Image (cartoon, rainbow over all chains, first blue to last red; front, side, top):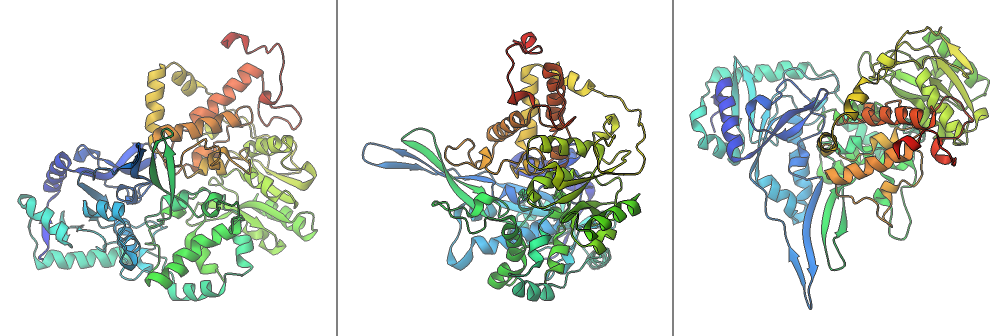
Amino acid sequence: MPNKLITQENLKALVNELAASYDVFAPKRENENTVSFGKLQAFEEYVSGVLLTNTTAKDKVYLQSEQLFQYELKKDTVEFKEKAPGKEAVIFGGRPCDARGFDVIDKLFNWSGYEDGPYTGGRKNTTIITVSCEKPETTCFCTSFAGGSPADGKGSDILLTPVSGKFLAELLTERGEKLAAKYSKYFSEAGEAETAAKAEFAKAAEAKIAKKLDLAAIKKNLDASFDSFYWDTVHLPCVKCGACTYVCPTCYCFDITEKKFGYLNGERNRTWDSCMSEMFTKMAGGHNPRTDTKRRFRQRFMHKFRYHVDNFKEELCTGCGRCIRRCPVGIDIRKVVEDAK
Amino acid sequence: MEKEMQEIAKKLLAEKKVDWVIGYENSFEPGASRPVFINKPEDAVKLVFNKSCVNNLAVYLPKVKKQKAAVIAKGCDLRSVREIIKEHQILRENVVIIGVACEGVESSKCSTCRENKLDGADFTVGTVKDLGRKEDLSDIEKFEKLSSKEKEAFWNKEFERCIRCYACRNVCPVCYCPDCFANRLMPEYLNKVVNTAENKVFQQIRMQHVFGRCTDCRACEEACPVGIKLSLLTKKMSKDAKKLFNYESGKDTDSRPPLSTFKVDEEGIAEIM
């Protein structure tokens, strides 16, 4: 598919038109220091200058609380009600690391031939329009991962990269092509010059990311360090809240609970859960294999850079650095895994 | 100032007076810092103190209670240290308090700070200056004047964002319950479903639990990953504790928190009945 071009004005008009017929989620200001993916009424609400929103776009597809079904006990039967599928959505203005997060958890929710209904349903309903990053932050480390870049399109349907006052629009999936075809009046054809300019843009942005993890060495060290004394002290500053896991674009662990409305009816919900929480591994009989904070802390890093690599041949991390920024005590995931021995 | 702090820490560790020194070290970018636990005298050089040292390190003290720890404390943090000594979460003799003369960090509380004195600290680093700052309750008074409907609308908007990561609870020096109501399944006080109503229930119960114990240190607000304005609640609670019970949390280590005692004639209460 040839690349397209879209001007600033046309992008504005496109987003406004999309907002009329889809749920458009984009970085939106909540208060003076919070920008999160919120439902956009008009393009003016979109905050373009912020690289890292406080939370990720993950929760627009993989809801923090998902109702699986409602039930009601009738005389000699049980009646189930499933939730109606949501409106078609567009996630606009996310960054390559956010989009890549979807690509990572797609594999998990479609693992071993099992398709997770609520997640894949939401995913099929959502078009992701990402914007490349010009000025990465000090906490960014997306280039550590295979193919990771501030201008990488993995997980996006359309990737917008600013080139010569316009945006180069790469249509990366069928969904992206469909959307561009539907709103073709806003797009023009891109030439080779713009495509070359994008490559330059990517190179310049990548060069601004100072930190690059040696993932092979980290994996090797983590493989050998489960019982290491390292974990005895490194976890001490961690307060074991779940901020890091809930702002992460790839953390996917969940819990399933019931909510009773009365004796005969209720609903079953899936809610995000966090390995940092003591309740996460507590079993019905009261036993808890991860009682202490050290084991819970170790699990997060082992899962991301060791177990997930064993199972999926890629890390459960996209290098967005949100966990570093949002951690109340400044735990730096890069340092924790690099120092592990 | 940092050098002095490092020397004290090094000496305490070398002489085995403490097992840990809890302070601040440089973090991911210039001008950022994070809490650090130090147990080797040679690592004391890592300690720093600057405007980014916002964390209230008192939160760690109940967790090291079987060991001895030295803690770097600003004047405001010292109030939390006194409060948890008062509540028997740590023994005074197990804590060495290294007070630092602070002239303000990057926190919303600093513009009205009158708490930088270091009374009761074992060591004092730097010279405490009178910052000449005044109490400012105008934001609370303005909020109090809103109608119930307006207040509800404001809090609904704030707690709609809450992701219930419990960072506010976990960084709070006086939120040390080993079995928090929010984690209980039987009885289930709080459903795991995250929505505005449940989120508000969580914060309402938490705030009620810390009333008269909260020192308005703002650790919860600073920790919140979605920027919920919790200081409106903590500041209001401090104001009410003072007005209703003439009580200031963390002022000393021996007075009783107001909700843990009972008086037949509570002077401040009659007027709100």
